[in-house]
Amino acid sequence: MWDIGQGDSLIIGGEFDFPQPVFGLTNRKRARRAAEEVTVGEFTVRDVPRLGKRLFRLGLSGSFELGEAGYREALERFQYVFWSPRMKGLTRALRGALVRDRERYAVSAGPLLGYFPGAARRAAEGALRTLGVEYLDVFQLYWLGRMSAFTGAIQEELAKLREEGKIRAAGVSIHDRVRAGKLAEDSILDLLMIRYNAAHTGAEQEIFPYIARRRPAVVAYTATAWRRLLRAPAGWKGRVPTAGDCYRFCLASPHVDVVLSGPRSVAELRENLAALEKGPLSPEEILFLREFGRAVHG
Image 1 (cartoon, rainbow, N blue to C red):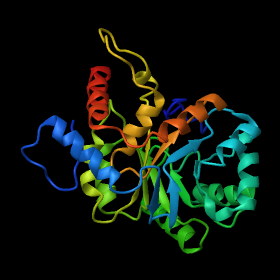
Image 2 (image 1 turned 30 degrees about the vertical axis):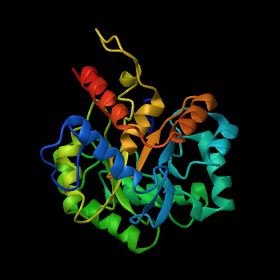
Image 3 (image 1 turned 90 degrees about the vertical axis):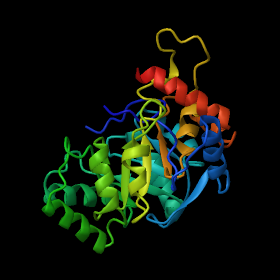
Image 4 (image 1 turned 180 degrees about the vertical axis):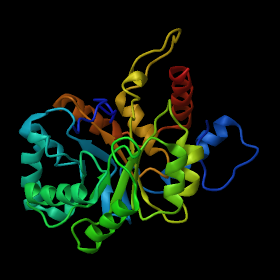
């Protein structure tokens, strides 16, 4: 199981980073600079050049069964969909949505285990048949180094699938931040799915500084740190963040294109959407979440 966001599992089988160095600023000024940087553009939607689409920045994972009706409601707002054939309710709702408007959605899929080229191709072509579409927006290897390998043969197969038009972007999910930074700077990858939240901010030093040259898309997951950010750590006397706060924290980074959510009920789904309508976090909220995240991390 992997943490996605509010639901905190995906069932498949420091300081704010700045594009340019900023010296001599207090923490409060840094937070304000970070907030202002995001408000220059739009907070809830963004052009994602690597995917060729303008997307709502809260992504949907079918980690928990909302039922077909729940997913149909979700797909009225969500556009980036992290999907597996095992997500039965989401599959039915998504097929219908794709028939109505294929270009609205960015669908991500991948092989359960991504070690061999043949398995990767079979997974991609099987996903196309299951969803009834001609291409996948993202085809990604899961948990690189543990559930998949980025061998030369695998890279060649991903490139072939992309050249054939069966996939539009090749990606990986990865926990090794140093390696992710290297892949961001120099690889065939169009997208990185990375762990990033208020308790685990290492991407700000080890991944985000290496994005500028190629501009791969970045999808954040583990927004609530396995729900640890939703409960007070030992000795904490102040307020506790909501899941919506956690998603807004991730989206405060100009480097994050989409943050995944895994709602466990329609009520959670609606709460998450309502949270984004609040817009960017204030500088004070960013500082609070960083402080809370440090307490959770220990």
